[in-house]
Amino acid sequence: MTVNKLILGDNLEILKTMDAESVDLIYLDPPFFSNRNYEVIWGDTGEVRSFQDRWACGVDHYIAWLKERVEQMHRILKPTGSIFLHCDWHADAYIRVDILDKLFGMNNLINEISWKRSSNPHNDARQGAKHFGRITDIIFFYAKDVKQFTFNTQFERYTSDYVAAAYNKIDPDGRRFKASELSAAKPGGDTSFEWHNYRPPAGRYWAYSKEHLEEFERKGLIYFSTNGRPYLKRYLDEMPGSSVNNFWDNCVFRNREERIGYPTQKPEALLERIIKCASNEGDTVLDPFMGGGTTIAVADRLGRQWIGIDQSAMAVKVTELRLQKQADLFSSPYTVQLHKYDYDTLRYKDAFQFEAWIVRQFGGTPNAKQRGDMGLDGKTGDGTSIQVKRSDNIGRNVIDNFVAALQRFDKTLLDKNIAAKKPIGYIIAFSFGKGAIEEVARLKNKEDRIIKLVTVEEIIPIATKPSIGVHINELEKDEKGGRKIELVAAGQSAAGIEFYSWDFTYNAEKGFRPSIIIDKEGKQIQVFKTGIHTIAVKVVDNDGLENMEIIKLKINNPRRKRRGIEDFSLKSLRMRGKK
Image 1 (cartoon, one colour):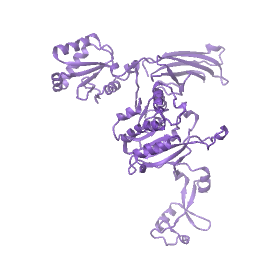
Image 2 (cartoon, helix red, strand yellow):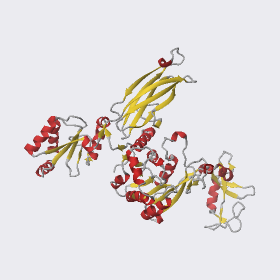
Image 3 (cartoon, one colour):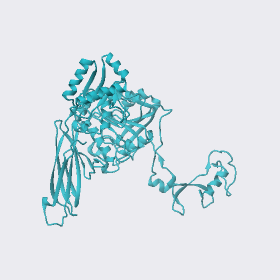
Image 4 (cartoon, one colour):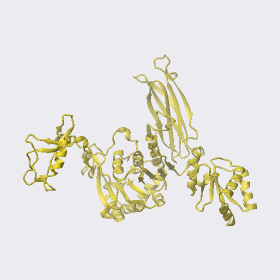
């Protein structure tokens, strides 16, 4: 399976198709066994079906449902890999004993991590709760092989109280340091000497040789107390901090802007710690319950490869929008695999990208060469050539040229397929004209040469993307001289509209980078200053298909005497055929 891929579908079926020992790190945050309605977040068909499957029976059914998925995760995990399974108190004991210990082995449990969900205190007692406040989740950290798993020690900043107490001395240049002992409880080497008229206290020994102490002194790293006792200077700015323990109380949302409106969204700080500690740049990270897309967004930002899977089309689209928002010149390309695809997006996609993608969807292998390939864009498992035409109404000339290319490319294979009455080649296009269909029939009947014409829709389902329009209302002048504008987007789709996403500083070269990722109503009120503003809004339907509208809004100088609607003008451009 290729990496950097968002996949819509049942993770069990997708995991079964993945190669063994192909993933370095897995983080999964499966639906908790809590019997709460908020487990259904989007409400689209795939998510509802998954929800019903999970709760068909009690905890035994839930554990069986989860276990068969974790079995596949264990299979695809590399020997150096790790898995982090996120759960809460409802089923954590069952998950550890009946799933993780059995599949990974008790000895491969590295940590049981307690994650404090929020920095704000909970006061359940005020609501009549007869239990201590439940403010933590459990994250089980297991290695595939405890003898060779990847682990990078993580550090966190010292607390201000610890810094004030321990690093309580300051050099003339302003550097803060603490005075560390130069003695040790056990001897090591030459430890009986006197240095600067001082010996370690009774029962203790020098921790360093005399040569080391003199080198420290030459470097200005020795501090002498008022009674002449030497200490080693350890500077605060050279310390990485304290090593992270298994109670994580500072992996919380950094600001309001990080929240996208997904109810069970996890903070980026949490996934950042997991990904940094258990993988390296270039490693592959898998999240089989993608949800709000935090794992994928963080993995992409940290230079990891990734695969994200979710049963909800909306989860896939929200994750894609998060990737678009943080994209820069160094971002890696990725693919999105949906159940349905819209004609415009496919028809006007980059030609080479489309050729490689549709050949893979057909089950073939794309040609690595993009030019000088005689028009042969890939091959099937037995080597039979595939040609792709990103066009409609393909004519007879395409058939003639294809047959000529097959004869030049591999006549031995051509003759072999003719003798076996197998197809000599496949042509994939959006549609075929009468001339092409007639010529294929003639070749089969008169020359025993079988060419298969395959439409794109036979390979992947094609649907119509949603339509969208935007209505603009001026509400009032802002106190600072701007204009308060209401933008109302209205989308239409046979599948139903799921949400809207807005980019208030749209730049065509940079692409769509949403300021607001999830807007369920399609209504926004913004204040715009004098000048020209380019705004883009996307609509996403329940199939995961999208469309985008671009609005150019000109706000005139508020000092002019004109009032109301005449004080601003707009131009609306439908971005047809673009994603």
